[in-house]
Length: 414
Ligand SMILES: Cc1cc2nc3c(=O)[nH]c(=O)nc-3n(C[C@H](O)[C@H](O)[C@H](O)COP(=O)(O)OP(=O)(O)OC[C@H]3O[C@@H](n4cnc5c(N)ncnc54)[C@H](O)[C@@H]3O)c2cc1C
Image 1 (cartoon, helix red, strand yellow):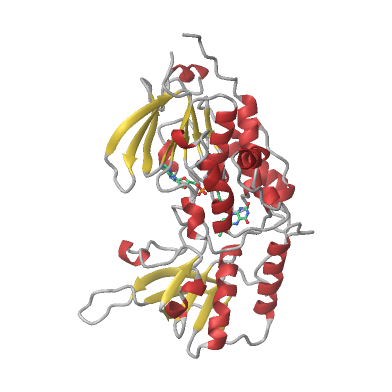
Image 2 (image 1 turned 90 degrees about the vertical axis):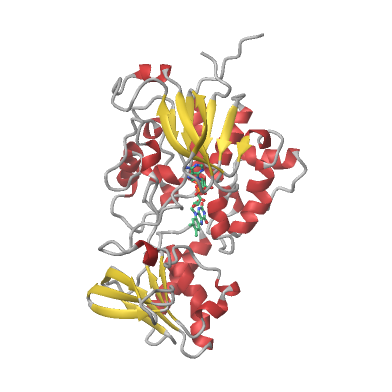
């Protein structure tokens, strides 16, 4: 059988674009389908300086593509912001003549299956590969199908950033959830939003630490500005330093935040260690409706009680859209929602050693990226599921691994 394309790539983030580059380089006909714009997830945190330098964020093929089309190759030792990474790398590559004609933005994949068979047919059988993937597309913002594309190979690089992980013990009303912030705010351009207000930051990872670092100067300068930082663990130093960290930006953030957390008195800051959020409601305004102007949090643990706040910044991580591949035979980890074999390899390499460096985890190999579903590969942040240690460098390695394992496309002369 022949199909209009050999390969469908879901997601135009770094992993999807690197996959598209490799596909083009190896002679695969492909389409890349992106729900928003290229690099949509990174645009949300474009103001944040990354931890990793250009050298780790770019592939040799990507750098070559920049050079071939007359774009400067960034200084590999420098560390870009998210926006700089998009402007100087991802966007020019996506716009290159090798990729641009095969990219469809503003198009969401809403379903993936195989033609003629269902999930429970031919269980773990390589003959499933005889049935092409059928990928249903919709316009962004709609769930109505507009077209179906077929291809024998599918790469899911749809990331995790669209789905924040839960941050309360019991479910929150949809309207209230919609007023919670789940992305690191650009505090410099939203100063008025936080000045003189009470902001609750939830989470003990790098995103929460970044938001805290950016908000603290406002608390020091503007009277009445308060920040409450809610942490599940009770450690005096909330961030675990990566042993012998090779990423100085990351090491600096850990050092700065742990110093702040152990200081006796930081203007405007209260840290609630050993505390969980049980539930959250929006405060009613006159007439009983809500306008997203305030919250009441019910707390459990060492600071059990209630707390009111103007803003809630829930930075507790993200989780993949597992529904997208629900009709395929994909083996996911029951704890992380990442690929099962990859999750086991990552846990095996890092275990519960929280000071271990994910950069030291060796490239995991093609078997960790395979599922019972033949020719389906989940790559990028989605392959790690909720495991928060994913770095672009791992995605670049995954793309190399997948394309080394795929047989070159065969073309019959017309
Ligand atoms: C604040 C922050 C800072 C980070 N800093 C670093 C760093 O310094 N170094 C580093 O290496 N990593 C960093 N990361 C981690 C990681 O590299 C990024 O999250 C990166 O964006 C992951 O790339 P991805 O291609 O896997 O996913 P994404 O960038 O999330 O791309 C997925 C794309 O798929 C699209 N999509 C989703 N669902 C569908 C669908 N159904 N149909 C079509 N398209 C879909 C999305 O719109 C998105 O554009 C950081 C992450 C965050 C959040």
